[in-house]
Image (cartoon, rainbow over all chains, first blue to last red; front, side, top):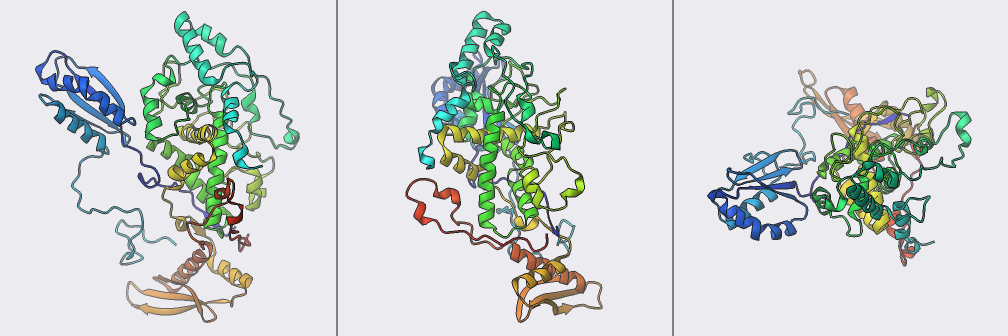
Length: 140
Length: 407
């Protein structure tokens, strides 16, 4: 038994093989009385059913939030959530916000400096085999 | 017998229905009946009466090896236990979480929500085998294991046994399957119970009775030192070459890792039963085999130069010789030596290091990895691709290696 195996776990690459939509739940909060919820109430009555049908992978919850501004909150697979206040917005604008939450991946917004992120080693190689940028050196 | 001739939907019907009571309705219908019973009478004991009207009999399993300390792991699962949970208050078809999960994974329409709900119930949450995922997960685990090992064996025919075990563990070990389950957006319930939404994974974190073991195989009765070789692990141990714990020593605390992995396996098993082998294979390929693994990082060599010498002797190559190809800064603080390993006039590999022995070792490791990681290509046809009619003539035999260099 000269060679031994090292136990690791594989890493997932969403979209290679199967794609999993990262938004798992959208919550729509509205108020029956307040004027800022007017657009939201129309959206819930007219557009929401179509939106839910087009996105079956998202669990949708509609709930009253009396005397508060209307809010859409998205829950993501990475455990984070995002909320957008949609006060005084028209249905079309609210739909846009819902689509924004649907397409988000739940990560914090960051400025992307390097556009390519890769799990593979650099093709060019590292400049010195004994010094890794993060420390640790090369393993045989 | 061709695979196409099998009537899988019949099997799935048998599985969903209680196996010993053919006259009873299938699971999905029965759940509805229970739901109606419990909702109309508002008493949990009524649903109990429906659900647990028959205590499962002791299985007629003849365990021949029991005296020798070898035992089949599944036996203790069949012992009659008191029912631990009641019928859910919410039907699977009413759960938005479950419907969303079904759509998110792109599961086939033939797979009903009731079965999906069943895959989310661990044996520790509901000990009745008609309602938990134990059987489905046994089936699905075998299917995943089959597809992954055939792909590994065909793609990397020269992998040593230990690395093959490590690679299988990396692809479908409990750690990976937990990641898969979590990346699907499946959350676990804080505690199992009838009030829990069927879209949550339900399992008991601590149990008083020892948990039934998950993997099939034989528990070793002998001493540990018999485990030095690799070959016995194929017979005795689980899919990853790890020993199966004996009866007394199984853990009392169930980790979420095992609950998630049995859920993922059960889902594959239920796809197989409801839609057939091709969708199950496609599902394994999409969700498990497509994950990223650097197989060249799984090797840990003990004595690479010796192993390389034995390899050359076995293959009839000339004895390997390490030669210095180039060097820089021998007397400086950071010298670099480039060493190549030659067999006669052929260079087998090269490596660099801060000293000559280090460079030689790296060169030997690189050479051995080049040998072990030989691959005929990633798109070689697999044995399971030949399933179905009219494909028998197309099969090209795959490369089968003669085996490891030093055992």
